[in-house]
Length: 277
Image 1 (spheres, rainbow, N blue to C red):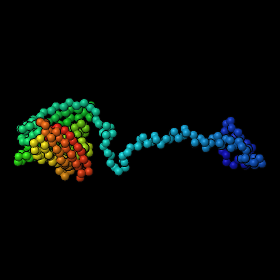
Image 2: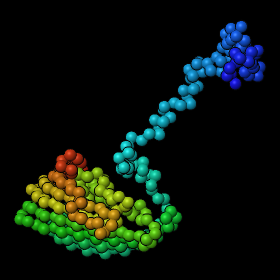
Image 3: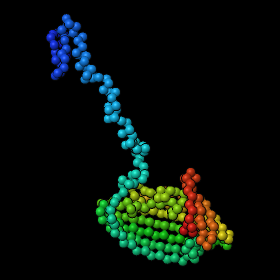
Image 4: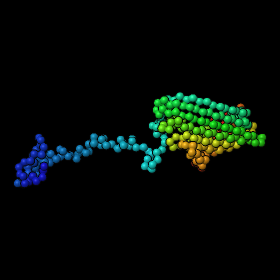
């Protein structure tokens, strides 16, 4: 201890192999340079300026770990990074059966008739959550000529799935999603989802088509909704997509559709062949 060295007198050693401190008041007390040398060696301010000190607490180490998302608001955005982390990897055996009835006059550019498809699936997942899943799919399309150049086309698609074991979550590959060219134009692909995985879904598509020679014009309105449970189904929760499309028929119609959603704030363009459905 260095407390009260002036009263003790003599030399006080403050470390092995280090100079003593002359504490005699007659000799100037602590004016001896040995104390200063020892103090500087142990607590030299230059030690904090050494680059090695900064490397240990480099701010860039923390920057790499910081996500752009703000998790303090209580919401976690399900982006591609999170989907990869949450994806359940496993093998599954799928057994399916389907019934189909088709009376359309043309499968690529129908103008009359109907299409009905009913499918069921039973899946056994091996590994991961080892779940058993049943899946149902019902789709109907109807085409009604209105006058000489108009066709009203209507499509309805119902999907439902469930896990046979209540203590096991539904595996992610069987979650229901809508959005994009095949369901709701104007919405990003698979952009309509349900928190915790969609188990029930409804997709309704309507088109008014007109054609003169090889040229055609289409007005469309698509709607879809996905819910975590069938008891939560509500038409008010469905997402809308709407737009206009042009057709150019060279034996097979080329299709260009422009779709909007969310009050014309989001827009998507699609190019393909054949009618949308």
